[in-house]
Image (tube, rainbow, N blue to C red; front, side, top):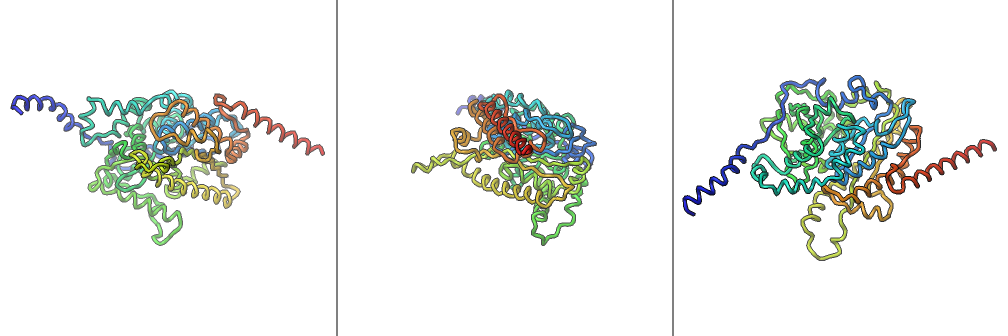
Amino acid sequence: MSPLRRLALFCTLLPFLAACTALQYQPVKTLDRVDTDQGYRLLQALNPTRNPSPAQQDDVLMVMVFSGGGTRAAAFGYGVLEILDQQPVYIGGKQARLLDRVDLVYGVSGGSVLAAYFGLHGADTVPQFERRFLNQNLQKVLTQQVLSAPNWPRLASSQFGRGDLLHEQLDAQLFHGATFRHLNRQRRGPFVVISATDMTLGSRLDFVQEQFDILCVDLEDLPVARAVAASSAVPLVFAPLTLNNHGGNCHYALPEVLDDIDPEATDFRSLTRRDYLQRLQQYSNSAKRPYIHLLDGGLTDNLGLQNLLETIEVTNSDALSSRRDERGIKKIVVINVNAQTLLRQDIDRSADVPGFRPVLDAVINIPIDRNSQETLRRFHDFANFWNRTKSAEEPDLYFVSINLPDLPASPLRDAVMGIPTTFYLPQDDVRNLKKAAAELLQQSAEYRRLVRDLGSAPRLPENLPGAETASEAQAASEAKAASEADTGNTK
């Protein structure tokens, strides 16, 4: 190559090389001292004097948990919210929509997209989220961004990846610059807990200040879209997202509940607390780990229920009990929305070597699905134990578990169980997932018990196929039961 051509090539590449060199990770604001009265804290959110929203003033503590599963999970969870939006209940002698009474929402992976939007916008999530996310093709936009020449220098940088592109597009499409400061001070919906996976430790990291204290990082300074992108960063599809660690530099003190752990105890609470303490200690030496790299939260807890159990067992259960008693809680409601599907079976009909996609699905989903089933079993056991052993003064616990695989055999089940984990779904798939949510809630005995105990009857959304027929059938059934009761009273 002639010297002139070398010079021309160098001049052509110079802007790209300069961009790669200049693009560096921008750290989140760090803390010099922990202040447990400040920041986006779960315990403060449960304090009715600090958070005087209507949901915080009633005697029902309601928690929702949205699983992973890309847009499939978001659409399925949204279908549940549609029903709660049209479900009247009576709490504290006043009629309200069940949707307005949600206190906490946990979101993992695709479920974190819906959870974060719900926290920011509250009841306006229905119908805004469908229009602004479910009806859009985020996957197409992301593909265009990856193939766009202006992004090549950024993607060539060692400190920028496809996960950062996901952060940017989620922010542009849904969150519009919102940070956890907005969630803490201006949210119109429930308190949100988003989870991601620390790829080095293989453990969960929750975006709440209680966990960011050990990092000496101010969570309020972090964009909500970045937390959601980290929670949704499926391995190999998206690059991990970076978070700075300043641990060991803000006079952090461990929660008192972790000070006295029996090293020989083998009960669930002790094991959970020891595991939690070990994870926290991994962040305390920021000289050794100045950065953390985060992947899909579903790798460690695809349902979010482990997170909820750990909150109960670890993060100062005495304080949680105190908050519960301050509000005079009489009912605790946990609604689990699980968009898990089944692995493809058709590959076993051929001798062909499975391709990249089914192999990736198997590598990721097999451990996730097994872990999810164990978590569901544990939470069912926990709920049954609670209701069986609680005192008369303690609240009833309702565990409403809505799982896609629980749909009865039907064309609808066949349709939704084949929906992949992507960031785009055709409108027929969205409608089917919403209909599946309605059917599963209708067949849930625990949901019917909850609504009945709150002085109402289950109601389907009016805009779903079959809703009117189901409502009429429900009304007819109740009228028949009332008639039979009256007949029995006159005999």
